[in-house]
Length: 429
Ligand code: 4AD
Ligand code: MG
Image 1 (cartoon, protein in one colour):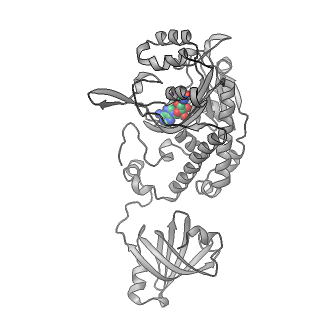
Image 2: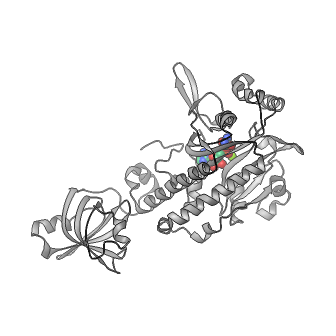
């Protein structure tokens, strides 16, 4: 059995082949039936001539409907007119299952396509997106492993919030209540004391009411944490990660990028280092970034869009005022009102893909911060213990993988970057 890619690579030309897959397109005249067949590796045109089959068999293949499954035997020829440059002259075939009324035709509404997502995932663009996504996940893990990070696994059912309590999903737990994790960060922090450098790629959950092009309620989160690394050191790890991932996608997935009509020239510019811009620098001259904001205002989706439209590479925005972020960020010793943190914003208007920074590692500072945020020390006893026993400076970050896919593929919405998006109104299929 061959894959269609074997044919497209030219290694079967002039030879016989056996391929199997699904009908991507079909049309027929009285004497020939054309079937564009697809499998996981590509599409190829297959042609059955009437003269080679008894009448009833020719009828079967010339009336084949979209997405019917079939096994074909035939001979491969090069043909410039065929959609992918090759053609299979069909000698024999077995129909595995013939469809009636495949529900996806052209020009369907977004909500309908989400309802039949389990079928829409077969579409050519979506298939390319999923291949690129697979490479992005692989390249992310590869980057960490090559640099001595250990992959670890942390609980999804948790008792503490990391990113504020308002956006937590509650789940019954044998008479008690737990939350679904928003971030593995605190658990990763516990693990650096044995492993020093750790990462995990796992789902995070946010009960966000916002239905925007970049929010999911369940998303994939790549998070890393390192002992002895400061804010600047963490940014260097991150920019090289993004450079590596983009390079791998260009190397391994150029065909898929072109199926998705992504401008590869833009991706080729993604080389570390990325600019670092202080929050205070942005609010000092907001008009330079197309903004009208003052010190203390948050940078939301719209502001990030304006800022990053002006850049060709990702940028870091650093040193936010403490009030704009959660409690665990380490205050800047040179200016206690600001924290040693950073967001990485993707270019072309995409905005935040990473949040990270240096963690408070001194006990007294953390206790003070918990109080200021109205949090109960008792809930965080284990997080405080890390500052009690052999505390060390450390930093980490979280990368929204679906946002990374959205940007790299050049998509309009995060919903197109994951097979089964979970948004505020959707948990089916
Ligand atoms: O900025 P966030 O909330 O940071 C944290 O959770 C840290 N505890 C991570 C860490 O340091 N270990 O989330 C990190 C990233 C964001 O930059 C964004 O890319 C993504 O997670 N993200 C979302 N992606 C999709 N849908 C949502 N609702 C998201 N919320 C955050
Ligand atoms: Mg953030």
